[in-house]
Image 1 (tube, rainbow, N blue to C red):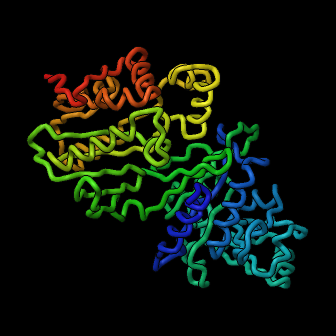
Image 2 (image 1 turned 45 degrees about the vertical axis):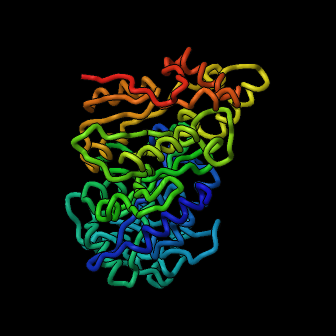
Image 3 (image 1 turned 30 degrees about the vertical axis):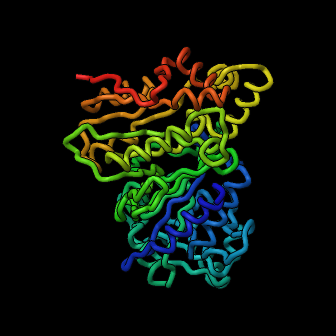
Length: 428
């Protein structure tokens, strides 16, 4: 499934499950530039389609009066097929222009200050057009948002999308009155006084998706209420192993082990070219296969991370391969020629998995990578078993041998030995 479809699926799943008996489910949804501005044409087309998908997934959509005055918003689902959400406007003093688009939509709901006596004539005109004007109590934050959310629920609108502006969004955050959070961060910088400021958010383990050049972030309170992984017994050619998939993306294959011993652990970064399509440019498939074979025999864990091409992603990995073929660069030179650092990978996501979930303190790390060893040495009582393909395999595949030699010379990876497995070092 493509990134766009996975993002759509995640959003639909969140909203389908979200329920609240006393008030409408509240989703905060907005786009910002890299420096936090919210005005102007910020998002790319794919992100705009996602915004309209979010709209059709909600019963209602809420904005503040300043957003309406500035943008003359339509709040429709014009980029996707689906029903338009009911527009809701927070407008304490009934400043809505009578020529605005939403002032002519008879399903529009306006919450105003219950003590506001201004614009009585305008209010009569709006009511004649079929709009609902609801007096609302106020508190130190402005209109009482809990009252708004409860009233929306009582009108049969089970969920509401809050789309702006920044003051309205911040009010929902400060009152902790939101269940879901969807943010698009565009790849550009914007110049505007309209920006998100002092947003005190705590969103542990959000999901992130690439939509065109933009990043789409989704988070839900459901994430904290559901298990952070699923697992099952998986028959493999190496034997029966447990397979665990974390909500944050990591995958673990493991077999029963004694946590008081040095537990064999392989931290393995994805390599679709080798593991799926059989590329012989690297030894990644061999390392993964050997690690799975080993943990089936002795117990242990393989932690599988989505960090393709030492973190540069598949597209640039293929570009680097092309540079190696056409310009005779090695793997390090090719990555750097594309403007990348030597290695972007991060292993911190493994720490809670190994220490908290599996309660491991003593590690037998299966690797020939000194960066992984340095990281593991900081956190565990460590020994290391060097994981390298045997010489007869390298003799068959010259590019693989050349790749490993480059990593030895430039990245200090441990050199190959004809036996493959070598008990290398004990760290005190």
